[in-house]
Image 1 (cartoon, rainbow, N blue to C red):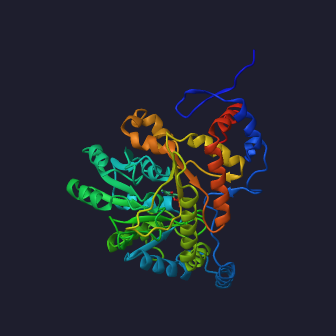
Image 2 (cartoon, rainbow, N blue to C red):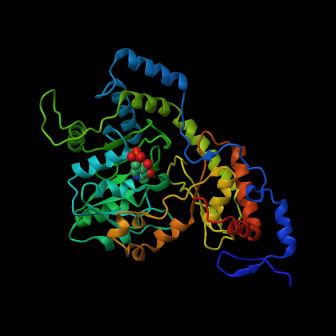
Length: 425
Ligand SMILES: Cc1ncc(COP(=O)(O)O)c(C=O)c1O
């Protein structure tokens, strides 16, 4: 008796694969079926932007000639001035990286006990609290914005709560007005993790001047970077003064230490890269916007797959192209990731599986997922696609052709993946 091949579809039902379709897969131009990968070299999410190499090298030579390498040299001072102006804030303190920026700010604000954060963010948001023995309490997100849902935040407030950290995920501003009034009513400090949101706005006002203070990351993969680095921006002069002391061991002058501090200073070479990057920021945003539009065009009307929309009321840096692979899609998000990796498209599942499922939080709060249904859903759906200055319109068209082919031939694709073994991510 002849055996019939069968695969399970996205909702787990067993589907027989007709012989015609099994034969058709031979002609599918996908690397999982043995075709040449769509890209000869790996295409990454967040490949660094370099800016004008000549200008960077000139600055580097100048730094070496003057032998002033760190400790608030002229490049750091200049970059702080430009960032403060761009973010519409009175003060900017450049720091070693965004995580140190969060830690310094959390400490300077006197947060303790419990602080409410999303579980759908990069792990540093919660680690910056836990590192200082403050308990991160996870609130759920809004599915439309992927940012904190103020109702879930309010439900998480206890007598031990001292603050809220909103995260402007994907550069999209979180519910700033609602969170501000919530913080005011409950006498909580409100700060923002703006790691993704450099160059973005909330309505007509730039991200950088909301809450007590906001923290940018200038990690190499960010739209504007300083190799490693970050910045705290605030309109509160007293807070800025305190942060400057804390960032430099508590030194106030040569021999006078007036505060418990740490080393959170940015070096001159990092600031030189930041200044160089800043000069091409508009071009980079334009490239990202063009890529985003190309993805939107090529992925239109694909069943179960859509792009996370940017809100036109706000300025965005389009730094992330976020595709959402719904439960109704013919392939799961993880299956698509495997298909794309085989084509050398290194798509990523940010911020899977959610902070509440990572250590140490998983052990501390084993039941947190019950209170975070929308976080759980979004963790299953998000697929980050490559963009940035190293990705061209033709690259985008080819990536989308892979996704379309895989989705349109979901049954043989799944059958092949099942035979191939566990997924790569
Ligand atoms: C949302 C978020 N918060 C914090 C950080 C930490 O920034 P850094 O890598 O500069 O320490 C990152 C980034 O990498 C991030 O994406």
